[in-house]
Image (cartoon, rainbow, N blue to C red):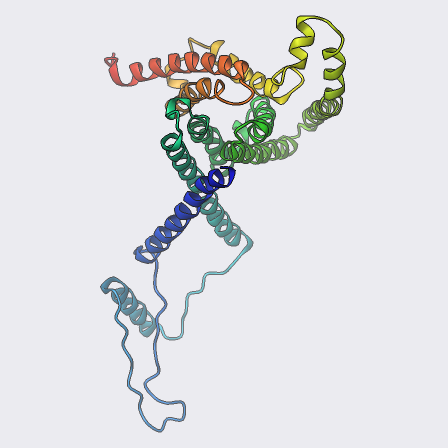
Length: 355
């Protein structure tokens, strides 16, 4: 069953990747901005003894016209050839352009794989799609890619001055915990783990850009403060990871009644099953504290993704093992607050009469 699950996740990934790169190559060749290399055979032999017949290859009319224009330009100026100098700047731009294509190709493949896995899991489940943890986990992975795509897009196109220090480090903690949770939960959600691991990389890049920007504008003291806070978080997290099992065993066997029962729970406060959804309250709380936010500052795609995430994970939390009521409750709150903002945005943009 586990082998079958892995096949349903990664075979659609390979198929979608092959289709994506094939279509990208076809678009590249068909683009009018691409000038094909002119294949010209000399009309005389190297020794000049006899003429050689030029050979002809079947080519597309657009490629033939571009080739003729290239030959005419060479005939008009036979001694001049315009060569674009390859500088570090042009090489860097070229590398970035292909990196963007590669990143977006990987994201597209991951989203297609999540959709295919969710569909196959919903159809293959004996209990139906409503009771299938893999179905709701696949939908959750699709919605989770929204935040990752936003971070990747900001890292490639937006300036470092718009990066939020608090939100960047909150997202680092949030995605780190959820990547860990998606790996240890039953059934294991590889696609969700990959989504949050990608977000950790994207947010780390944002943190790097933020630190470099702060140093360039002379805010070295702020960078030192950020580094000390990050070091404190790392030390506390390491202490919790190492000492957590010992503390759990001590509290669970202390005979403290309900406290010992909660501590011994598989989804209790000494496990990642508790702290991963608790980190999500940092995002849901911000949405609840700003219910009257102006609609012109509400992002329609962002709040659509947050609303779908809340809907999918509120059901998903009840189907995984161990059952995660904290994950269900935080996503119900996220769904309510995000749908409120989304409804206000849709009403203001599409149904309100202009003043």
